[in-house]
Length: 454
Image 1 (spheres, one colour):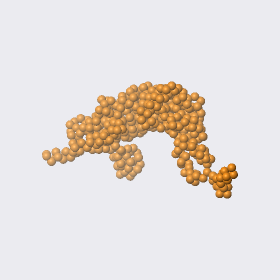
Image 2 (cartoon, helix red, strand yellow):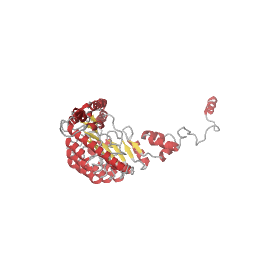
Image 3 (spheres, rainbow, N blue to C red):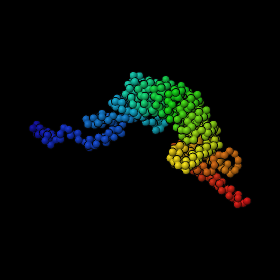
């Protein structure tokens, strides 16, 4: 026993040589400056932040003094850990995001496991329904950006209860993104009552994205039109069978500052009438628009007549017989003419000595540089060569409407609708179509040749 005691005594640290109590947790991380520790804590996720708080008292103090301002909620985080993180931030969080599924197959598989194995719907929304929703919204008084994806959020998807709580406690909300799995049970928990409460309680909304909100009707669009006049970005994706032209027209007439509008191809009851209201209301600001399956040449004509800042038009979901080569070519001519007019206005103002003021007033030009080229995504069945051929016939003098002059073709990008695997082939197709234009490029010197023969 004496030998064992001697060995234990030799293994004990020498008090004279041991570090002080304050330096007992000396680590390279703790030697960093406080600003670097703050930056590190702001970049880690919820699970890593909880692990750091349990490492030592110093890291726990730094984490408490520097609460997160942006958090990401995913299904890999336990709901209780996410709730403790939000509650410990003491109102400092202004951004909540949720990672999307990278593949639709994974999303559908997760949905099948969730709703086909006997899991109750109330278990899928643990903190966004009932009293928990009120406590969660009360802990986010400075929330400005909220993105909830029902399939991947650990706290659950949006509900009418949580929407009313957010409207009451988060008046600074500026960006809202809600997504549900197609035809899922939780999507029925978010109805017009919740969307109307959000629109009334969050008038500062500038970005709104709704995906697969099957219970939403035109009443929600009416509420957004009344309370959120400063809306800049609108996305209606997935399945919205109850949205019609009545709500869309009112919304587009009220919100006249829209910059980007993405409408799902499933919106069969949103037609050219809504596109005309959008073009007339947001004529000075609209830059990108995605058309529904029920839109066609009428929508393109309205955009060509009013919108001068347009940079991208997505027709990939339109019917092939609804969008023709002539309609696309007319739109491109209008956009190019608007850019040419802006260049002329800028040049005239520069010659008059106005300079940069005129460059800003022209809208589509900056210091005499033309606006970027227009990108048009064509539907299936309509090739870029068809649009080019329409301009070729006109340039060769075969009559017809003045569409797609030869001098404007190189500045236009026509990309056919394709999947992610066919992007390279589509680009090659477009380049070959634009390169095969010898008649159009020789159309300008044709008069000289005629003069020589005469």
